[in-house]
Every structure is written in C-alpha cells, then in structure tokens.
Length: 316
Image (spheres, helix red, strand yellow):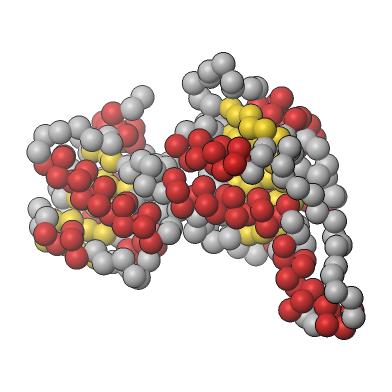
C-alpha cells in the first residue's frame, strides 16, 4: 500500500506522521501546488489531504487511487460524486476537533463582548500609565449573563458551544438540519440573538446563509462568530455592515479564500476595534490533531478490512 500526504504542513510541524509508515510505504509532502497534484497522486493507493482540492481535473490521473482520507470533517474540497462514480472511497473524521473549536468560539465571544483588545492595547501602548487613573471602563462592555446566544448548526460542536453558553448564563436557541422541539427558524434566531455563532457545514443550502437580508434582521450590537466555512457568510455584506456600525462585533476563523488576498473585503476591516480575524486555527489544538491522525489511521485500516467507516462518498 502506498500512502501519499499532500499538505502535511497544515497538520502542524509538531505532529509526527510516523504512525502512517506502519501501514505501508508513505510519501509526505509539506505542501502541494495545484499543478503538482496530478503527478503526486498518479500511482498512490491512499491520499491524505486537509485543504487540497481534489476533483476530475486531477483525480482522472490517479489510476491506482482507492481511498481519500480527509484530515477534516468538512469535505467540500473533494468531488464526492466523481469519486462515487469511479470507485474511490472518501473518508472524513468526525468529532475530533469539537473541544478545540468550541474553546476558540468561546474565546472569541468573550474577547469581543468585553472589548478585550481595546483594553489590552490601552495598557500596552502606555496610555494606562499616562492616564493617572486606577481603572478604565470605556469602551463600555456588558455581561453575557441573561443574553440570548444563537447557534447555527447544532451538531457536535454546536452542542458543546451551547453547553458553554449555558454555563455563562445565556439563553440558548439554535437551528439544526433535523429540527426538534427546541429548534427555531434561522430568521427568528437572527432577530432574537445577542450572540450568533456559526457551526454548519458548507453546502448549496448554507452558502451565504448569513447575507445582507439576515444581517438586517439582527440587533445593531450583535456579536457574530464564524468557525464553520467562509462562504457560509456573504463576506462583503458582513464587511459593509461592520463599516456601517450595524454589527457590534465580528470574528471569523474561516474565509472563502485561504489565505485571503488583497482584494478580499476583510482587508477593509483588518484593524477595526471590534473585529477579530484568526488563521483557520480553531480545529488545531494539539490534542485535536492527534485525535485526527489516529482516526485517519483507523479509517485506512477499516477500508482495507472491508468495513465501512466515515464514508462520505456513500452519502447522497
């Protein structure tokens, strides 16, 4: 069995991939450019990717490919229809990063709700010392206790975030793919929530789920945090709302293009006091990455044992 890892660098230089070599021949590339993909997968049996895009343009050269393993839960970067039609199995990893993503979600909400960067900057730039006053209470911040925390996507991560929100004294409302008695309509959530955190996968139904129309329903001091996929939000609409003062705070760890370039709308809000932008790191606590690797190994073993495990190519 030949295993090829195409973008090992995204898994972190501190994570050893040596366990993969116990399964067979293993070729590891730290990075792979789009034009290099076809050549690097043309004779491999298993390919492991994180952010690399695999579709007909490169997969048609992979004559021996039997299994694609994603070091991720989301699989929108793989053409699963093509894979299903050509007998290529695709496995993702579920639940490995729930603690990590929930932790960053809470961190971003707490930082925005307390205007943390403004206060630390006040001290770091020497303004606190110059003020001669023992304390500073502007910009004004409010307690989260009693606020309504809206969760878009109440899966593994959403539920964990909900637990944190309840521990902070928030009233939790949520949307989910399979409604239950506590599910609310997304427009109602947008109207009622003081905090909105996004944890839904990207698909045709969720692309630009948060758009100008839904932003217009929200409270002017709403805090929005996106740790799902960049295209779940209309990024231009979000940037405009921030510049116009129609959003109280915004944080995101994900973008439509990663890393985003000079023409991206978020360049206009980079230094905005109530904006926090992080480099797609929510999933990546060391413990989460280790769990991810362990699950990839189990997916490979299961596939070669004839078992069905985490097979997203079999989903309609």
